[in-house]
Image (tube, rainbow, N blue to C red; front, side, top):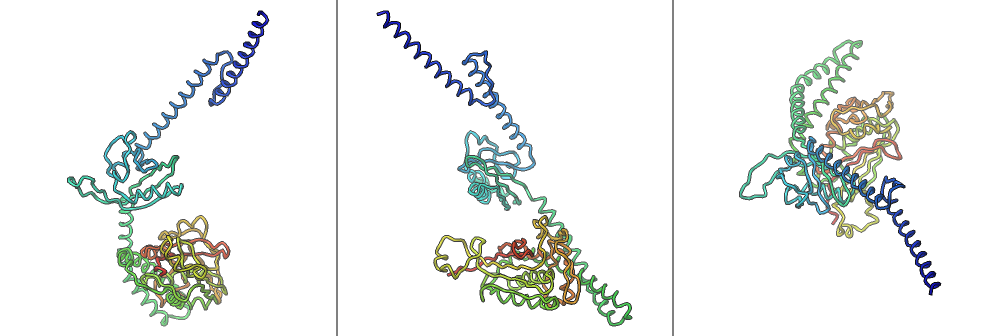
Length: 468
């Protein structure tokens, strides 16, 4: 009996030691998971756990305080901010966003509501969806019209332009920064009106000066003719600048009219625009290499689109070295990507869920291309960056110098321009006019450097017709 008791006590002691060691191992693993916790060897395990829990609570309080500080900062920010969850329900917004979007003050963190039920702005909802799906920051511009949700208390409020920046967050949430662009738009309109008024006032005296200079060309002494030629060249340059400014003003006023285009074949427009720049092209021995279909129809304003093509081709000729080739491509694009209709069934493509086909126009020259740092600004009016292309020589040894990597010396829409006018310096408005015409047709334009040729690569997307 005594021996059995001793054996039983021994086995129980061994089991107790094994269990204690197992508990010690679990506690050590638990303590190891606690961040930045150094247990005191003199404290017991219960005290160590309590200390770790205290540290975790302190970290949680610090994070909560940081969140409150960020929200306090956003409350005082000069831009609007709102945050929605994965179901596009409003979680929080600052005072600026409430003012911009006419949102009533409420605690949406406790009772989230669908954003569209609070703010009737489908453009804002599309920006949020696009940001959530792409998981990259997105931006959009639109004119916000505040609409009251109460039909018995309707108040007409002024509309103003907004710029939104969507930022993806964890868990499908999206944060949106809002900027009121009303003041910037008003200043831009005042600037455009002032420039247009000045251009109108300069038109008549410049015409008179040009007539006098042309008259003097045949009447002055031979040793003074170079001065008259120089005067006439500068007057022509100023006249181009005035014409471009007036064209910009006219395009802004006729914005809705431009969209009322007709079905136009783009290929004859390319041929007509090339005939307009042939004098300079022959002088520099530059040729045209066209690749594309014999006919491709788009809904455009033929006169204005001819101006776009003339501008792009005259620029490409002027800033290509002599005895080079200008490449012009015309194709059909889906979602901005050119497609080969010979390898795809037109009927199957039209019946698919693909987007509406577009007409893609590409113009590539043989120059040195745009400066990388200036590419984001090439379509800004009056923007002039660093010299991006080297001096190129014509067939007669005349130097053609690019004055701006962005404005590329595009001429106004005038097919009767002579060789001297084509080879003159640019006005700084050419690409701005091109972009305005293209966007008025609900298209888009892009400027890059061709990865293989190295020269300027301008691409224009225009709305096309249905394939069937």
